[in-house]
Image 1 (tube, one colour):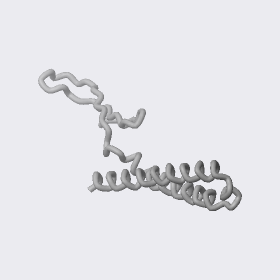
Image 2 (spheres, rainbow, N blue to C red; image 1 turned 90 degrees about the horizontal axis):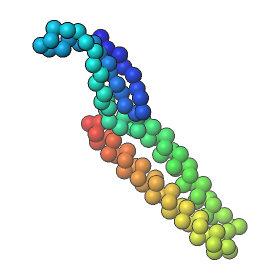
Image 3 (cartoon, rainbow, N blue to C red; image 1 turned 90 degrees about the vertical axis):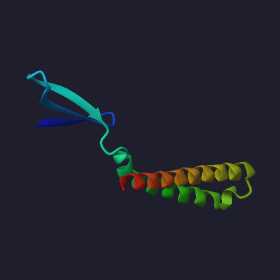
Length: 103
């Protein structure tokens, strides 16, 4: 049989096999990614949950009366909120892509 090892996001399968035509038993390594995006898929829900929490925090910061009269802080908070929203949208898009690949 063979042996499975992981390295830097790749799965490496090592097996002993007879090389056809040589009559000799030998070992060869076959590296390939099994189920592309699997690790990413398994972690994306957590990343989305974290991004949702970041979005809530940025919304609360933007609604803070302490910065309502400070234009610079208000603009910075708005820019941060937009960045978090952009990141969250990208995560949902990627999640949909990974779901599609699983089918």
